[in-house]
Image (cartoon, rainbow, N blue to C red; front, side, top):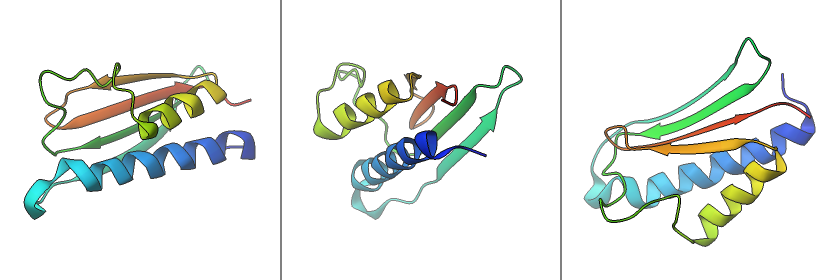
Length: 102
């Protein structure tokens, strides 16, 4: 169970990542999967993972350095949660966020 101070930023992050997936991950109506997972670690921290099986980021682009409005919003919301976010190329795209509830 998340409190409202964590649930709202998480919902906005999920919305932005889903929107990016639908816009960019599956060009030309390609099929694929989108997974959203959340779990609570023994430490009490929460882990939110959003991954897709799409085309991923181009090899010459580092998503940690991309300055788009959507990624700026996500970064700001992660900071609001006092969390950390990692990007991995996982046969597509994977964003993993870890935070503790306020």
